[in-house]
Length: 236
Image (cartoon, rainbow, N blue to C red):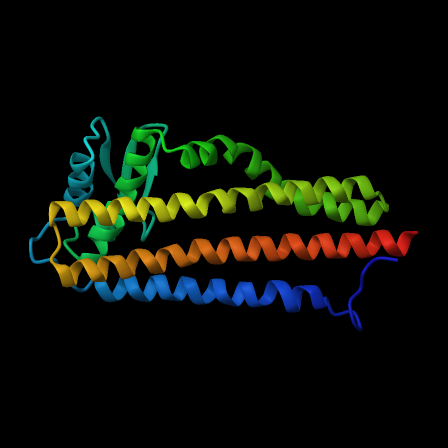
């Protein structure tokens, strides 16, 4: 019979997944709070986020990258398909320490592509596969349970594992982009020492959200494996 937990309660979720979900909520609140705090601190040199991103590119000898405005809050990203850094309203024209840190981080991704940083190219290559896996995993597992068809459950778990691999590859990519950003900030002296510390705290808080996402994904994968393993033993 299928795993039902204790008195119908999924103990694997409570013990494994829930703490990671709570950690993810905490990490998201930290990044929002840290960004909001340091977005009120204007840099003494008065560089905007867009100018900071351009400075990081120049410091690394990277050319041909566009910098554009994008709507939304913290929607900043680098698009390798068009070689474009897109900065949100709270970053593009802002001279805050937090905005400079975020903009420099996105420029760090552009530098990664320019120098052929392997993990980011791997992440980009597996994106389509992981998107399909993340979408199909739970429906496949549910169908396998309803139809009592173990192969579908296995395929569903493999599909979910692909999304976990994506999170695993994403974490070092994001940490490396922040390191490149902070190195360029220090090299170009676009921030004073105390401001540098604030930018670093902003990027460290952002990195924690990726740590949390990986933790949630790993915990969920372990939960599925434990449930599936238990079901196999019950079916013998």
